[in-house]
Length: 389
Ligand SMILES: *Cc1c(COP(=O)(O)O)cnc(C)c1O
Image 1 (cartoon, protein in one colour):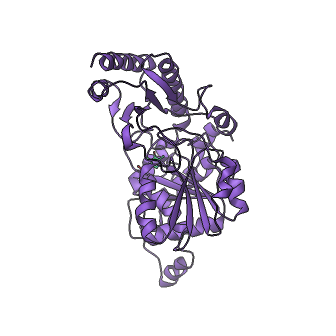
Image 2 (cartoon, helix red, strand yellow):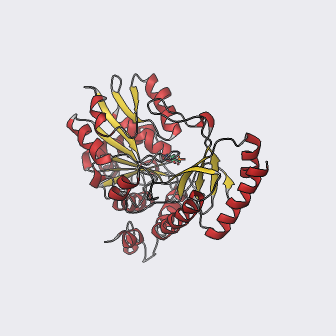
Image 3 (cartoon, rainbow, N blue to C red):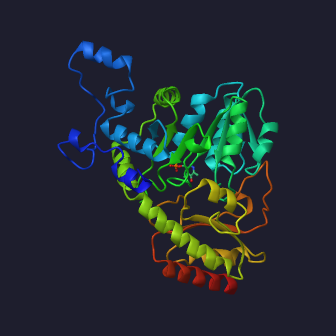
């Protein structure tokens, strides 16, 4: 089945629900068991069937089944946010004395978690250059348990050679995790050597900026049971409405993504012609340094990209440009229907293992589903404010 067909059908079982096209939203904590014997039986395989709200309901299972199919994995564990998926996956595999290799361009809260919680638990993190390639072998230690990847990085958009890193990491017995939020439908993690794939479904899967949701997808039953047990032990469980909004968003994900990517490409190509712009950071551009790897490994792009301004613009002028946008809202997150922008300059880009010019004025844009001409008009008026400010 092609992706468009898959997302339309995955996780749907109308025959179980009176023919209802969508699965019902189970608002439930307590599950009644018909007998003590049945209750005891349900404890033998606590994650199968429906036992107690926190372990999952048919709404959870529908979402997890659909996401596993989308990612090309075995089974998925749904979580209450993207960050809960990241921390849940890491804590399922790491213990005191272990070593973690974390990509330097990782989502900032992931870095914060490593430096605070994991450090406190006696788990050491080494950050590595996203473009490390085969050099990852020099960083692997006997106690390196996990190599964590994220490609492209969501602020600076370097594309990692995931198959190469995975092959070397596997040779050392390490588990390869990936934050696949940018790739969503367009990167097949398990076909590229990833063992544990994580998505912040808050972004494109939900797609409407109205719910927080995450997912961890595993390649086999053993790793699924490990992660499911760990996430359950922490008591993380997504809410019924959020799971439903994830399923609902999934049905239109392919068509939305194509539009987001097409608009982003139009904006990026226009931005490349502008005298105010030093560089556009978007791997779908033919002259992007990550383009070849992106073309080899991805089947498409999304609406998220960055720009670096030419030097010399002052903070008031940049703020006048950003504050005055009509369509680009100043907000964190991305993947919703709406266009967004955030300033990423100064030290808001934290790097400890690879170079980044902190004098560079960079911005991150999300191309929403507005008309591309309207968005270009908004950007153009912004440049007028930038030059005039
Ligand atoms: C937003 C984001 C997350 C975290 O997702 P939340 O649902 O906000 O917790 C993780 N990784 C990336 C790349 C993100 O952009």
